[in-house]
Image (cartoon, rainbow, N blue to C red):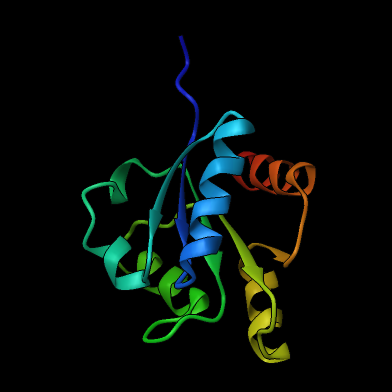
Length: 120
């Protein structure tokens, strides 16, 4: 039996992490969540993650910076960025590195973005 893809949710907003966890479970994924880029980088799940659901605007290290750090560490993985209010320059950079969803978004949109990112 094939196990569901592990999706790491990285967002500094706890309610977003909780709602995304619930939604991803309903959609058939196996979610994990982290409050910051640093929490994810320190996690034992780093090597087992199939795709990132990554907030663009986080304190400390934003989503684009985390994606670059993962590449630097040879942990490049599919990523779906999400934002509600990021600067245009950051959004443009994110779109060149992966898919970008604008909050709020629906379950079907999220599922399609993750499946597209994983198949790339």
